[in-house]
Figure: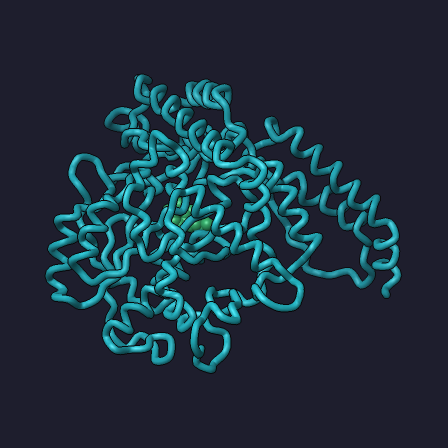
Amino acid sequence: MHSTLKNDLEILPSLLETAKQQGLNYLNEIDTRATSVKHSFQAKSKLDETGTGTLGALNEFNQRLEPLMVASSGSRYWGFVTGGTTPAAMVGDWLTSVYDQNAQKVKGDGDISANIEIETIGLLLDLFGLPNDFFGGFVTGATMSNFTCLGVGRQWAGKQQGRDVAKDGVTIPIKVLTATPHSSAIKSLAMLGMDSNNITKVKVLEGNREAMDVVDLENHLKALAGAPAIVIASGGTVNTVDFDDFVALRELKSKYNFWLHIDAAFGGFAACSRAHQHLLQGWGNADSITIDCHKWLNVPYESALFFIKQKHNLLQVETFQNSNAPYLGNPMENFDYLNFLPENSRRLKALPAWFTLIAYGKKGISDIVDNNIQLAKLFGNYIEQHPAFELLAPVRLNTVCFTLRGEKNPERVQEFLFKLNATGKVFMTPTVYNGRKGIRAALVNWRTTKTDVEMAVELMNKFI
Ligand SMILES: *Cc1c(COP(=O)(O)O)cnc(C)c1O
């Protein structure tokens, strides 16, 4: 064993203690740590011949890199849809590295990580009130979940037309219908060779909505005359958190031949809020659903999952099987995750989610969700009543989409946001909604309180 490695092994207890202390120092200051940082980062290009040992590496990290870390898991980082990390999730994540399992097989040689993953999927189905005829697994993010789900949808659509797309490629056009898809769904179609230029855009409902007009969808489906299609629905759009009507989609599904995919990356957590779960009514009838855990469940990156109906197991294995031999018999016998999703080797991704689910239960998760919704509505009220701001859409859940009021002000949005973010005290992201420049604040962090909202409003007042 190399002498530096040997030495590191000998001092491992103190190394872990040092790392723990540094982590605590960071977390103790997360409320005051900047949410953005100006830097002129210079990447190192030469690797030293002799390593520094872990303490040396930590030293270099602390000098060059640590000061550039931003409080993206803190309470006022409202850009994109950025969750934090609960204590339980952090413990689960640390232990994932410590145990370093490779989650694949359910039966076999002692590693039960795939069983833990399956247990976690079951707990999440219960949390969301979804039926247990879904099969699920963990991937890196909602993008990869969309990819997985649409990949199986692609195989389904091929089979409906007598083709095996996994084996023969996309030799026939596959119709995709959608209204307000997340950009990552389009990216997934591109990765799947599915002609992302050729999507049929379904109209949205009138009255400042992003949800699809199901009458228009039905017209498109009718025109297909029985040819299969994939419908990508939204369980929470990113700008205004609008939901498609899953009850109406369920009815259409009984009349027309389509694969229903719901991207509910963060909006799926509305199921944890008694007052908002109606938004998801009927979603259990989808063929596939995308959920992100590194957003509203507040577990560290990279944690997302797919739910795909068990009746599609075979299609899923056809799409992702790792061996070239055709999968014989029941795909659940000799079950191995690597035949069901894009990755082969995977860390035990489910463990941080498992920890947070077990630690806080349904009530703990729904408290996080309800708290964020309440605070988003509070923030939305400030915006609505403020003479300098204007809501671009009603606050339907946890996201506030707004702009500067007045004819000329849209041009100032960028400058305003730049100044606001440069304070390092709050972080929001720019957007364009209905052709207008706007700003989005998405609240999904378990730490966020009313004081954070008040602080943001106070800061905003400085730059109008
Ligand atoms: C965030 C998000 C995605 C992409 O998720 P990643 O985890 O960044 O890959 C997809 N769909 C929706 C609705 C999202 O909010």
